[in-house]
Image (cartoon, rainbow, N blue to C red):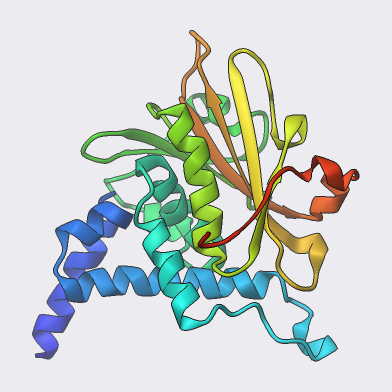
Length: 255
């Protein structure tokens, strides 16, 4: 029994590190391994709730922990996302929130090609960091990790409408049961004929200046090197949105 479990774990890790992740992995692996993938996502959801409550212990507050039904709704939502958003959750969000260290996953892993400084430059956008290329059965991706901790996921091909819808699905899935608001206009990123950006964040309790903020930019430029770029950072959404009337439509996860 122990040998079988160990073999299963090695196979699962090999699949994840080989770039077969998220929703695709859930369909490919037996139920027990799919449950392990869901467990990683549960850890990420719980860690996101804690991110909005770093100072909870000092103020006697309770972390933003979803109930069982909300958790299942969040996990189900995450399983509906297309490849780029799914890869962003797997590579970047899990790196930040569930200890799935990207440097460790890519080190010596032939599934990831570490770019030279010259190759990485266009993806690092003038900031110091590292970039890796990888691919799934149907898509090519680049993931970057800046020295300041910001992680970005570039998809070579992506449907723009789906990418923006998946951002909303992603944040609702990762923060089930909490209101999700939009970051609109240029505060979300470039807004031109060739670039469209959108942002989302969940209204989590406490420590507002460390709210996780999620963004996607899609491009139709004829000289583009990506169709969609997902990224996240931490900040105070009110500092980005001084006029609350500009926060856009507010929705509740699962609705």
